[in-house]
Image (cartoon, rainbow, N blue to C red; front, side, top):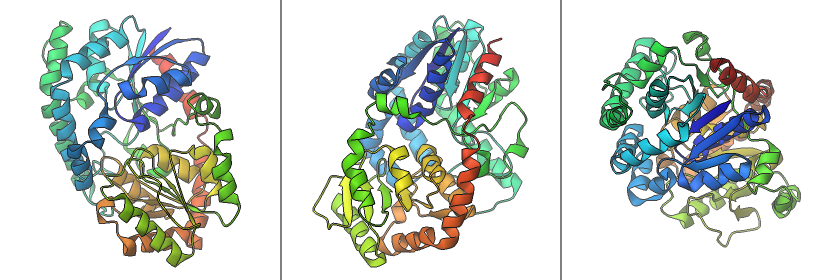
Length: 424
């Protein structure tokens, strides 16, 4: 069976789908991935056939306009920015999605590609499955991520109202480009939202995050939206993409030579003054008597002169480093959040936008950490957040939650089963 997986976004959006693709390939299926140009090599080295599909969103986020939008912390503003980028890329992406899906027996899409993929699937007459890395559909338990302060507990009608607004905004922003695609495919124009169309067709929407992170959500939906858990990339695939255990020897040696450090991951945060950020980490960790392992990622944070209690490095393999740390501080993307909580690390989320404020709110609500919007981060708030995550009761709750998250270790296999069933 030929399975096409058109993707868009950053590595956090692509990696779970690559994990699924590897499981489907192990089952002897022919899998082709359409990945953003900066992530084609990532998917290829992991072991899949991959071609370019969609714009380089990471490049957009790293631009001045992207950094300003991220710093504003507004999901709606970022949605408009991505829509503006798409204005110059829409026709090309339409062609790329069509090419990726050619001759497919089933199409697997994500929230970022489901709108295009559903038109291609309709034209080809093939089934489709969607992967959602955070709650992407209207419900009464939680509002649209970023629409309301994450510490609010609004009534169900208000939560549903935010979803109506968000889905309509998405429909309006991308409608013209989607109808261009439908015209190319010989389909009539449509003004319906992706949510409405996929619901009408009964397309499975697999929730690739753990139900333990969103109490009450599973009861809002039917079996078409199963919460299976996160799809982690196995160690063999991590080795293949270059996250070699052997190359972490020096960092691991530094970690174990003294008390476990707090991990700081600033990979996708809009850092304008890297020196100020490191000074803040230095100041707060000195005050609290903590060591700090700082992973720069692609944020532009570069190694600088620091004391022996701080080590600044590039990207790290979370599955190797997290189990050796005492707590984690990061942006709150679901992949990093899952990895830190699975390692039983109390977590401080410094959210930027999209689903990150929601996960920060959930970490706080579940008692396994704290949440500070990145735009409000300062030494006093960072110190307060670290005191919360390092407290004994937070550590104990993080350990208990880790046991629940480990119980969904079969998430990738369950998702592959859903894909195979859809194609029958």
